[in-house]
Length: 168
Image (cartoon, rainbow, N blue to C red; front, side, top):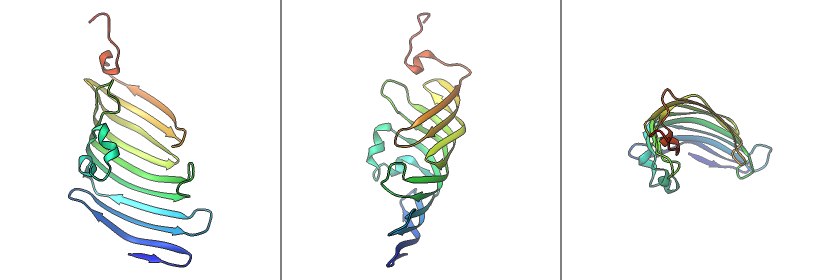
């Protein structure tokens, strides 16, 4: 339901459903105040490919796999670093192709933890081409992001990261 009041708009149990995606949202937007927006969003575990028709901008990355999210946001929409996020996004068997020059990232599994204006994951695993890896990643700031990345791989194939070994 939605209530349009003189001081705020309040959404309660807003429900959006597609064949594999089920989203529930609650929120308040205050017309004046320091933090006008409070929003909570939760999804079921869904197949990423099923949302491509409503998010065509991500299709170029060829995403697949399953996600589930439970996040909150507070702040000023539209302002630089205006929203402070909290919560988590679980990845299960996800894949994407961030660059044409590299093989796709496959079998991404782990949890992305949102906190403030950043994202981190202490145990993300997957494969890049034929190289298995585990990673710890931290991204701070969405407008001008700073990224810390630690990657471990028991057997890194140089061609998977765009390099060619002279011994091959």
